[in-house]
Length: 388
Image (cartoon, rainbow, N blue to C red; front, side, top):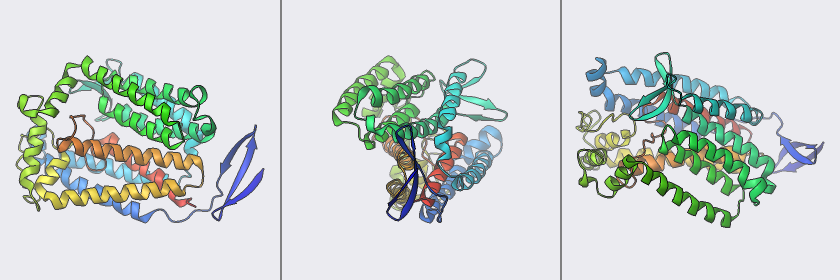
């Protein structure tokens, strides 16, 4: 056992089989209050917008205009409790449980593909029914893969510049998970997971030449996936020119732009959206930002982007000040996942990207995504309590 002092943070290290592994003494500070305030602010705005965007559709379909709001409130309550519990749970616990969590995630991904277990919605078998609710295993896999990869990179970083011991083990697991997600199929969630893990591997110090090769391989693979499924090809062509097929593949993008355009600077007013009246399909999920921009205008949309920017800034700060490699990689993975989802979702809504089915973190309706996002932020907050 040996000690070293770094930035006034005492770290106790144990030499185990020639491999240095460090833990941090149980000296905690207050969590990142700015991140907490940004998270709560986004969550509150999300709850308001879920009700505003879904009330008409919920009343028509279920006879209860509060149907989606009540469920979202339940998920938000569970997520907040989990966030504050995890915020007080030392984050290196996730290093110990990373492998079992990943195995459970793989089991769920396989189970969702079995008829009678997996539930199909909009052509994708991505959910498992649990009573009156459902869970989305691919959302769990994103978190499970981040935790496992953070553990692998923190213990094997010296090999990350090699293919055999560094890239190959991590990428093999990553693309196995991606393959299972694509069997559902769910290209959007798979893309977020792969993008997040690639950023983690890059931050760990992988060679640029390896990334160039992976980039070419990724482009070829993406093109192959698009060509292999006609509906994906239609999404690409409708993204380039939605007016080629305005009543089918281009419908969502056109209606989204119809929502954003009239919003102007200040918006039409909260609750005054026109596109939520059965023009924009299920506006409380992927396209909630379009309804927000229509009702709250450019100012409201900019406020949301500011809150996300604050969240990402604090996440990067936490990653840089984490007391060990595992904490740093874990924080990088979580904050990269949030950033990628925000960029893709808003890119789709404003017509800069093809429709992918990615939700907007903390704002869009969805039980699994909201609860797990709040849990992930809880992990970030705990890392901030141990910051150097």
